[in-house]
Length: 345
Image (cartoon, rainbow, N blue to C red):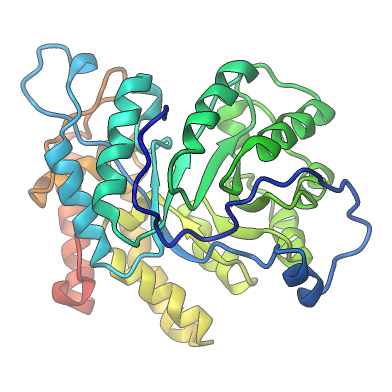
């Protein structure tokens, strides 16, 4: 996730401006007209795929397995046909922690060149402010729809420190920030008051919600300033039916058009259709997280011929037994809805 040459602009969601000011006030929720006048109408909607990073097979040490850029291009082209809202690259599912700066640069180049008008959000994680800002400066040359960023991991700052961290990044970023609230990975909990304060910054537009607190989720949706995107796959339906705006979920790698259909059914108030889809997909979702992500996702994509089943150490491939269970579970979904209707792997 480092400096790259500029690309042809994508149909990015949200403003590319770099605001100079922000507000900490959250005592009253603004109207949608007020939000629109401030350029803060919820901007991210639909199903976003947090794309895996494929690696070439054959390396004796999987930590050195090169990125498979041909497979990466295939994946991007594949998902462009599925009806998804966009891609998130170099996130957790993309094994960003195992990629050095130059490799992340190359992944960005490949995805952006292939994505066409499909919006792309980039992951940005770190706990060293100077290094994180340097990487963000490089992002500012890219046609990104947003930057997905979690709290600084491991160091567990105060809420005031977290607010300062995100405000500093938002002030510096050309693309809007999408907060990534995932305390079980970072060690830091973003309180509701902190999230509402951050929602007052005009360049913070969304949240990938993995916080596990239904009250927080509901309050953020009702507040209306952030696009609330489900980040926990099993909370997809509940978030959408409360009025959430979409999801960034790894399970949407598998039969993504069914996840898109579920989202569209909720938007059309066809909740009976949405429930049928959700309950049919949940056995697949459970299997995809029965072992460490993205092992099961890659096992499925390898079975589909889209990439090699290679992960970088210390991540490991899914067990053969689980891989077969996934094949059987997805076959059951295909029997119910038809594989051709899925429009993608």
